[in-house]
Image: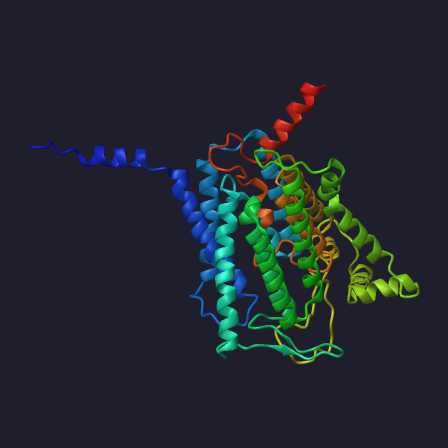
Length: 419
């Protein structure tokens, strides 16, 4: 007869077999999916009766899981710890000073994503947002959710299809496209690009969101060029080398885009004909940005700025003021210090993509940098999840390298040997 093991011994054995980090990671991804759903639905007309105190309970669970993952994590190096502490301190303090909780959300998502596969994060985000976007569109077409239709002078009818504004619908499709390509990575093929273009055309015909459409076409064109270049130059293992000067420009593009838009906005004057033309091309973004600079000015920790856009209702607004450019909006609202930290993170993400020779990822970051010239979704949870990859695991299973700082340290050691 088989001898029974004591309950205490069985419990201890079970706990030893239990991978605490893996369990916490799965729980975090589950709560993250709920959080993303909550934020995404906030950009739509879908009516949801959330339970009492749902937001507070969700944020408590999310923060608790982040702290638990940090406590159990064996992956933080000293440099990563210092970086995480500095970024968290700046974003948290800035959010308290200016009242923008999106900075706080960004801090939590960056810390929570530590050590998690970058593709797994994006897959969860993509699955949740695309499912909800399809539901929102179908619900609006069936009449269960309000479909706002905007009629503007010299433009065709623009439908929001259940979202709060046509450009928001277009932005959701745009970032879903980026997520899809990120997941496909080097497996991207011609038919993927063709599908992207078809979806972009259908979205444009529905929303008449010209800027996002042009950005998507630019994105698709870059992918086509890369596929052609890869076919001609890839080695036997499929590896591709980009010319150094091109990759360096791509890495620096976030700073270049931010610098150009902030400079143009600051010195904008309607008396100068080229400025007037550029402002018209950018749909008054220079005008409203300059108005924001004159009224609120630049500061270290930012300030809360009341903005009134056209979204949420087709009724004509008596007053309109909106800062569409992410760079100008971020600098004025979040303050110079937090904005600088976010810009540095964009640089580091691009630099990591270059060092890892992840050219598809680098092109995604390039397009985000360009798109943020005209859109304000740079760090918004409902749209852009790519900042969360700052401390995530980029390498595929079986690779010895992990984390942003390890990649930077490896590159530094190589340069030191060359000397």
